[in-house]
Image (tube, rainbow, N blue to C red; front, top):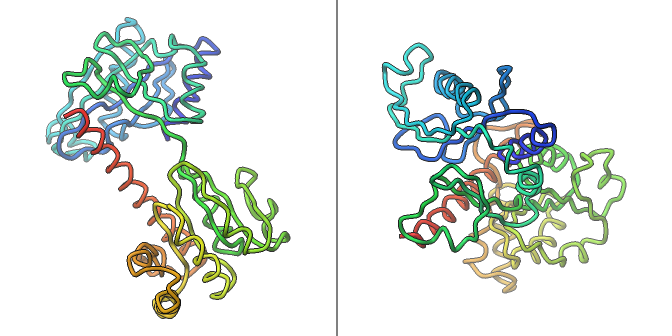
Length: 322
């Protein structure tokens, strides 16, 4: 993930270790990676991050090592056609554009540490003369932008999980690995414990009435309801359905969803429009049976929804530039 590359750059800058940062700045057609993919290439052949692997990454590594020897930044424009990638099975047919920056550590450890920490939204980029800078967001909204590449780094999305049982214990570590900031809520201290959850998971223990009424954080947030029973699920949903979560999923069957939703409509707890925002049963359909398989199906759906959010934000930024 990109913050891992940023942290590796900060560490290299502190050590004064030479390393080339390569990134994908544009894609046309099919490609093994998307815009924003990054990798660090070290003189001894080590690679941190990825630009898609295979012959594409091998070619960029070759160019990156040349760039480290000369100290000169460069751009690349590679067509992934039959001739380029046949030996490695890479014949996507698309085009990948990018930059190689052998002097990235010159920006300093504080610069890269700030991006790695992601405590607030920060826009950084590469100017037409390959300089690495932080930019005010407004500078990227003008036509004929002089920047070869720019991106906004934002804090990780929050994931609130109601319930600390087996499903939550399987979902939480997966979500951490996939760059969610995870908080688990339960009224049972014995379960809402770091004996069952990684140290990086935030735990909140209290009566459900108090937990459900907490205000969500002011960053993009997702929610998952997997308590120990239908009554507690409904109790949490009663409050969480009114919170501005970008996506809200609840464990259960279609019959459970129908019964709870009918009750919410009859009692005017929620409108039909609000109920449509609730995914129940949560998770994509992969014929999951075990707890681990269920966790994979759930987190896959959250990843999909997060990607849709990123795409929508990118489209909005593009409209501003246009």
